[in-house]
Image (cartoon, rainbow, N blue to C red):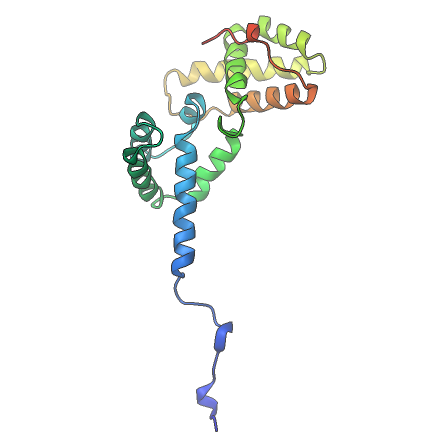
Length: 191
């Protein structure tokens, strides 16, 4: 017969420590995130706001052969560094960038188009508006001017985030996809 003192809480009680499986899933998620960051294009990677030690580890990983053991170990090291920082910050930055080159093969074309719009200004805006008539020309011109001003300011400090350039990229990508057209090579002259 049981007394009141021997109450069995059973499986309803929350575990005091995180399970090994949960810890492993979290570590794998961080590793995948770090690998995704290492695979980003140059402009997308440069726009991320990363701690210095993490950026240094990722720079080293980006220089190594894609499927080498050295790169795998370097990414594990970068993931270990990332565990010391909030994962949600980096995940949010990557999410705000949009797709990576591996998941969206046209992403580099849109990055080149954005660079061309910023460097050529009104001429590139007019060419794109002729190609894609449903674009809001005023909005596009406003985004280009903001991104251009931001680029001038970022020349002094390359670590500054570039939200206007990111907004321009997203707007152009969305509108061109809605129109169902492919950006011609003539608009992608800045290399």
